[in-house]
Image 1 (tube, rainbow, N blue to C red):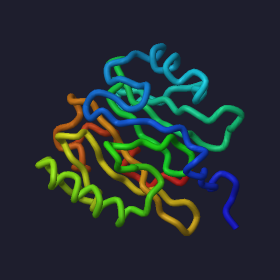
Image 2 (cartoon, rainbow, N blue to C red; image 1 turned 90 degrees about the vertical axis):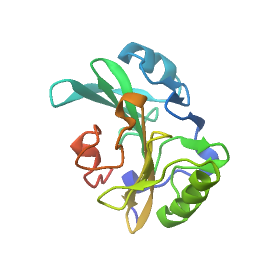
Image 3 (tube, rainbow, N blue to C red; image 1 turned 180 degrees about the vertical axis):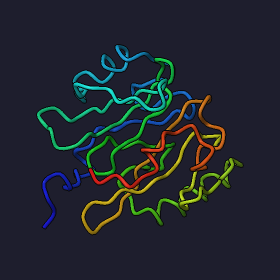
Image 4 (cartoon, rainbow, N blue to C red; image 1 turned 135 degrees about the horizontal axis):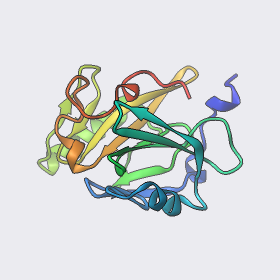
Length: 185
């Protein structure tokens, strides 16, 4: 039996967001400051009480579902005070779609096949990082995986243009190292 913190929210119960590649995710727009992010998520998600520093200039904040202290639904990163990265929890985060392609909480191999078709048809780049994660600089997307007990589900990372170059590359991307480690939320 899965622990409560590993329970996956049903698709119908997830907030539905749309990805606008390199511009924003749902109500969030890259370049927003902390207060703007909190305001945009008001009513959907609640901020944690602390920020985490990465390498001195990058800060991250976790956002939780209301009345939940289990684990974050969303982690956001700011570079010099501006939103540059949004990571959606596979278990309890919003569903994010790219056109009609659902990106959150899916079987990674199925999503990878659909993403490969999507990028091929639209003549977008498809690159793989050292851990085998597919991504696209042109879309500002890296498709990571996250454990939910014995199940693995997709946990996408979305980045601003300033972080898009080599975004799937573990050693050269600007995505903080903490995002490349396995996260057991």
